[in-house]
Amino acid sequence: MLRGVSGSVSLRFSAQVPVLDANVGVGHRHHRPSPFDSPAELIEEMERHGVARALVHHQMGETLSAVTANELLPKWCDGNPALLQQWMVSAEPDSLAQLQFAHADGVVSSVRLHDCAAVGERFTEWLYGDVLAWLQQERIPLWLSIAEDWDRTWLSRVAGIPADEVLTTLAGFPDLRVVIVGAHYSHWAAVRPLLNRLPSCVLELSRYEVLGDVTRLVGTYGAARFIYGSFYPRYAMGPILFYLHHLGLAEADLAQICATGAEELLSR
Amino acid sequence: MIDGNPVIDFHGHPGRWGDSVNSPERVLPAMDAVGIDKAVLFNIWHPEGTRANDDTVALIAQAPDRFMGFAYVSPLMPEGMVAELERAVDQLGLVGIKLYPPFTNIKLNERPWFPIYEFANARRLPLLWHTGIEPENWPCYVGDVAPHFPDARFVCGHSGNCPPMREMAIEVARANENVFLETCSTFRTPGAIEELVNGAGADRVLFGSDIPLMDPRPQLGKILTADIDDDAKRLIIGQNALRLLDRG
Image 1: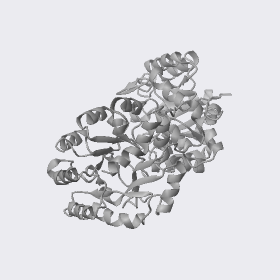
Image 2: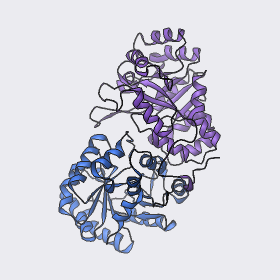
Image 3: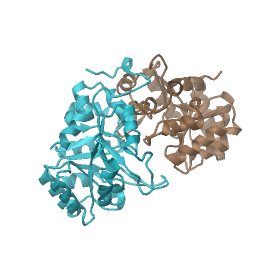
Image 4: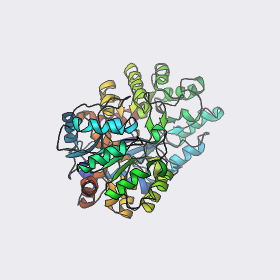
């Protein structure tokens, strides 16, 4: 049993359970270069925190082109076994076809939706229904970010997908496994309704800093509804991992959140 | 304590904002879990200051060995501003000042704030501003003010928050010995703490969490997982705060 008591805190931290970071972006965004540019640099940062593997998408797909991101990702990862490749999908006309072609080759284990709100699109059935239906049919889990986006200057922001759109649209795909990424303290009122009404959804915890709430949520819904992601390089890799290690969780629950949950999603 | 080192959280709020509720029952378990000894609290919801400061003192009274407080006033109600500061510091025992320019539409380098700065300067008090992208509180305005009140210790809350404002806050701290940088922020960008330490010096950086708006554990985790040496961590998590709160 790991306990986050003060006696266990040290000036130096490294994970005490196996960790799979379920939210890492690689490559440069068109308006914001990444602080690293090679698998070796990313692996070095992961090792500094005790992270063994990372689920990575190419950041080019967040707001520019999912199709291009999927073309760039394998080259960027260069076959590194610690980097698990996540495909992206968007409303681009050839995006779904690209996924279906790759899936026929057996290389698609998860898909992340582009940041539709950041590019002015709504998360609606009439726009994304075909993609969602296909993912549900093929039992491929979807990562869906509800985080806001910032412009080049960091002086203005675009709000993320409203919780109402998430609920309304996903209600039509009850068997689709969805990882909701980037919930923030400003989402505190929406988190429980999302978990209650979407029993197939999992909450990724990279930005969820509501005081004591992760402990309460795990107590209510069980550890299987939550996974660790850092959202690196948008956010530092270590702080949320440190947080999870100091919640007083049972070791099995900590392990579930830090790696087992993501492994289960990716193995379906 | 962490490895025998004191831990002071320099940024917390009493009062209620949505689900953000500060009570010893909610706050102390999170503080205890990572060895936070004390938290500095200030209530910013009442512009006349009186209710805000009374609320702060009432919360401190529930755990006086774990909390200390800063006074709050606003130039939106200037007539009682200094008198309330005198009451808050001399009678209530609050040990610094917190100001929140975004509520006022008055830039922090404008004259309506100056009686507060004069009060802090005369008593060698720490004064913490919210700093960030809002037009009232760009860190560069701190640089306009700090040289004129050399005995006050000015703290840029959130260190400017987003990356370009953080760069500005570092520049201001480098130019002014009485300017410090506090770390709480939802902008947990990689390298942020390293940037503060390398730019302004570890002796100018203070750990803060924004408790109870945010859980203090990931905010402390920013410091402890940063790529800085242990001596820098010791300064940031507590030693600098103790030095700042010493009015001698």
